[in-house]
Length: 441
Image (tube, rainbow, N blue to C red; front, side, top):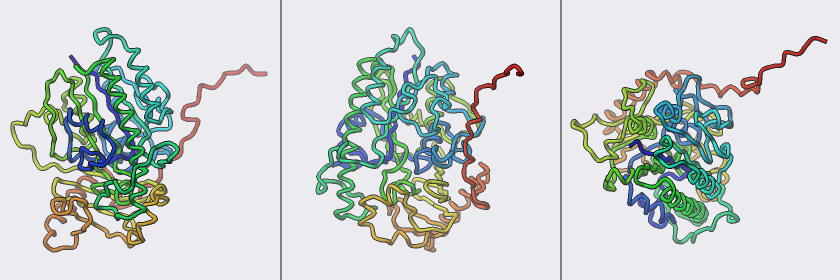
């Protein structure tokens, strides 16, 4: 029987979870979910900011091709003719719904879901879980309805993290990742961040209970992910590991009898679309526009007959608070980043510039950025030491630079030769009601 599919996504979490080596993070329920799931250790978003990352996830296409290269509230939206995951699943017999947050358009009803309870304006975790509980409780028995594809989106753990909303942790007890300075300001900031994660964890646990008590686990797949890296310097809004690296956990239907396991292979959010299409009965071949590949064999833990060629995934940033064009190609061993505009080595978005971590960061990040960067992920997992100028890495640098150039040419991305203009502003006349044919006076 075709399974129900629930895709849960949150904001700005990256891999800040016990499952990914951060034991002090207060997320025991998500960790317990991971223990029953397939955990992807090297999953990445297509972009390090909200709208482009989600646009790629829900279309299987890179941001330049699907159109969303900046934030939805800055005018970015899908190009004409782009098909979304809910639209594709509807054509395969699914009933689709969005509950809670989305960030691909100011109007959630244009994203291809059959229904949007709450109209995308229920952002907070507990609000969203309550609405989801009511919706799931109203479903007909499985044999009397279509399979569902339900997207559940929540605001957490986006900044700010006010203590009026969240219970802060003890700064002395937090994990400080290696890409951040370990000082009082950073620890206080992370302690507040932990408060938001704890609330996310509690809400997700409630959601899991609701799923079990309504539609059940026997024939339900649950996908847990986030849009991109956490809201800290050298993470969110960058193409480094901490910027595009995401939590990705898939709990298959219990009826599949798949043992929990971890996957070390490099994957990207765009892989989810062909994976879910295959589960729904469409194994392809898919449009040439689609960038991902099905990870269903990795979920089922059934090795392919022939080893796949080296995986390379492509990530990008164009607009965030400002024009900051950069592109990258990532392999299991290396990441090559190309910067296409002058600027500081780290362009901090407004929420990071105002953060406590920024207060204790110093100004080294204001030094001019290089034209190209290369990091050896094997020796430098936090991607802190640029080896692009070292002779020992010349062959790797040249190879990956050529691969990235060829990819940009193939998808028509003009960033190498000309600036990409801002998105044209919306007009209310795009969706006007028909005019009235009034009688002459």
